[in-house]
Length: 134
Figure 1 (cartoon, helix red, strand yellow):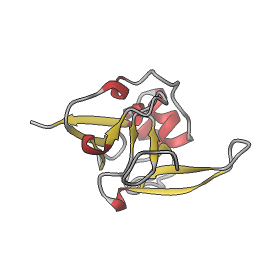
Figure 2: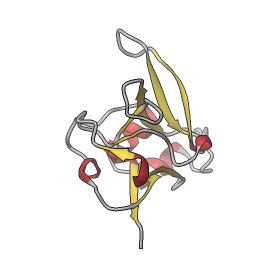
Figure 3: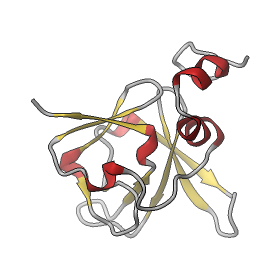
Figure 4: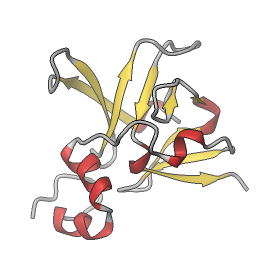
């Protein structure tokens, strides 16, 4: 029963609260199939929260359609919202994106995004909770 996240919840508690897919992505660094998240096509204004700790990570103001099949953003809601680290799980290294608060795996960031940052944060929709603006 490790508790290596800022939620104060054990892995056992998270397994009960999250769907199997959410747990696999957030805690075991999984990836959802492309074009399966309803959030990929979400066009309303609002915030995207971490499904584990409900920290605001992304804003609709920074979302765009990358054509990749995953919700994509050119920057986080605020700089400290996410952390990154080198990922060597595939043949070529990538930069992994995690929730800075609870360490949940979110996806990866690539250098082929639009201005102003040139970044594409390719994020698994399953680990996001969308809150529309009122």
